[in-house]
Image (tube, protein in one colour):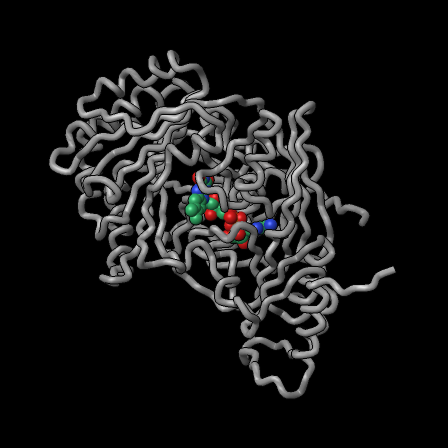
Length: 521
Ligand SMILES: Cc1cc2nc3c(=O)[nH]c(=O)nc-3n(C[C@H](O)[C@H](O)[C@H](O)COP(=O)(O)OP(=O)(O)OC[C@H]3O[C@@H](n4cnc5c(N)ncnc54)[C@H](O)[C@@H]3O)c2cc1C
């Protein structure tokens, strides 16, 4: 016997009554061919909360982590089942509604919102850890804030990102780099199987043996291209406490020591297969919380005991000016937070609507001390004190993974040179920052290998297809056309455009064109 309506059911009844009542005055943009009655039909059919421009809290619901390219969705559907995703896809196809998929909402270029429908899967976040078989199964909307504690309860680990509110769906499909990646790999290297709902509503499972082309493509091909990713099974690793270490060098007046530190990091850890058990992210920033000086901060996560850690970092400690600001042992999630804590500092005057530009380029060859000095000198021209470089250390097992086995191709890089610039609302320097980041990457061309990390998309980046996927781009286009033949899932940097003839000549085909195997559901 059911005697009471749930809160969601009451909300739905109210929404439907409002949508179908003759006297509501809300208007639907003229370029969207959907009526309020049709929206009422969707509302009745879909399992999950629906938010419209006229709903309370809409301004918060439409917000991304970064809001540099804001959108005004006609509706945001927080789906609470796989059927709800199918209902949304059918509705969007029937009414030709632009659609974006959102999980953690951390797309740097705001590719998870659009002015049509946002299918938000953040409520799909179940997790099942199987320590005996060293696997974890998750629904793709789960964030690291929920996943890491579940794994740590069993003493297990999956390499993940720096920020707890990033979701695995977007992160893994772009590769997924983190503090333990040099030891355990890019997150997409750990995937055993995925389940996806395609634009036509059919369900596919992809692994090494079934739909293996899709399995190859989703691991690096980026989200929002092939279908709605709903679940992922990963292999996981036993991991006890780890060490965290942060060491700074001041370069406010002289770049010599800080450049020497960057060179020492490169020579002792990043080239060759040295210390894969030492995860490395080196930040270049302005120490706003401290003395306001420009600094280099080595952030390390070390798997081993304290004596081994001390031996590993001895070359760094020998660089003049080395100041240890953090050294502690703890669970991975704690160390991950602390090593990267507080940097970048988000300008308080932006809150609650954060805005920034980010961009990446890979360094593959060893640089000399003077190169690092030049880079630090360039950084000194950053428009405000909120700009930051994050030199993500590659090498280790990241570079051992065979390049052709997934669409994450950056296997010969030693560093991802990632920059992020927040704007100062008081001085209104957004455009100045946009131009500065373009000039930074122009300057960096002499050091970088022409590729960029696809999880850090930048809308100003031309030639992104080659930058993100190199000689495998046309392979991705073929897989995209097979699984999403109508290009239903598309956005500014989605897969599908053509390459220049010069790049087209360099393309490699990897996957045989076999029929799609759909689940009988
Ligand atoms: C503060 C911050 C910290 C970060 N730290 C790291 C880091 O340490 N390491 C790293 O590698 N990256 C990092 N990133 C980048 C991050 O990995 C990417 O932005 C990632 O795409 C975010 O995934 P999401 O699901 O949270 O974002 P969303 O914005 O929801 O999605 C990102 C993309 O994936 C698509 N997508 C989302 N869900 C699905 C789905 N279920 N099915 C199909 N497509 C989907 C979206 O349409 C969009 O194109 C960081 C980003 C931010 C903003």
